[in-house]
Image 1 (cartoon, rainbow, N blue to C red):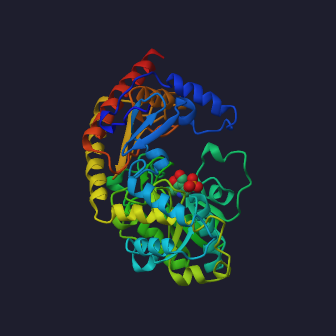
Image 2: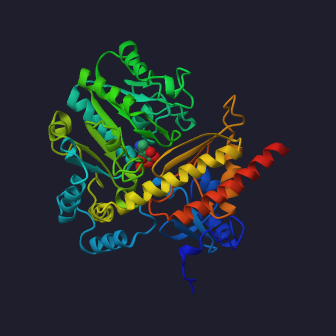
Image 3: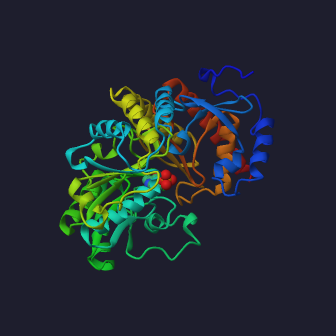
Length: 455
Ligand SMILES: Cc1ncc(COP(=O)(O)O)c(C=O)c1O
């Protein structure tokens, strides 16, 4: 008999990590699964069986507070009943019929359109973030006739070849080159590690001009797009100043290139408002969404103007389609997610608890010298960990592993395999549970710092 699952009891640890059942099932699974799972999955070797709200349970009945939302997907918490019910009902009537219109898709588009401004009212759906990024590259070439794309150091856009071409210097990129020609990389607005070695109070966002230099010096002036995450997520939770984004807007206006905001991670309330661009004052030509938009069901999409989506080769019949592009179940799940967000209460909770957590993280930084920087907006937060604050040398992956393990042993799951610990709980987390998680982080940091002192 399965014990009742009371998320209120989290964090609750009944065994070490991984517990005996996790160990057994992990070994069975590992016989077949490739050995390239994410570092966190490999380090912890947990086997998870269910989740409710901001809590997930493993097969040993340990209850973990989720400070990761999986891959920043469970914005509305785990297994939200309205989403689960919508998927089950739709699955019982029509699972899939290519990209034909369905009642579920029409309803989803209407709900989505209510969250977006007039310039972003035409949609093309896909199933993964990288697929939407690839399609956006084709779209930009199709609309502008250009072929160059400017992206940013530390950017993350997905694991397909076109998307990887746009990314910063992640080790995961190595070994797959050569990448797509026409990908031009510009320094990012990373205030902790400023490319111009300025400080934020006196910089006047001078780094924005570096993008012009890339355009003037490295490009053939055939720019199709500038693609940017308004807050770089996987690259280290780096919020870009609104002035930087406005500068990109004017570069695109001047050159006729499309400004693409990759909001696959920042969308669906992650930074506070429904979309991160809402608080920047800059409206992109193309918005990319994914991750949390269908509560865990695979979904991604492009939003733009009809004239952009209809132009050139991208506008030809069949050019935007793919097998699972407009999944009926994704649409049903998406409508349920948007319904849950409509009255603003979940977004408000994310913003309020996120602000409280950020303040608590700043207090931790006063006591833990390993914390070099605290960054965040809404429910997208991070600690950048360093060996010392003067050199800002990033800690090694071994330290990141120790910290992640120390937290998991105390019942909190986080993400980030490098020197940046990402803290991205579901927006629905309660303040008490969030603070319990921060207390665990405090203890785990002390443990890791004492180990560093021991060598
Ligand atoms: C900003 C951004 N773009 C694109 C992607 C790729 O999404 P997916 O892993 O669904 O292909 C990610 C994934 O983390 C992301 O954070």
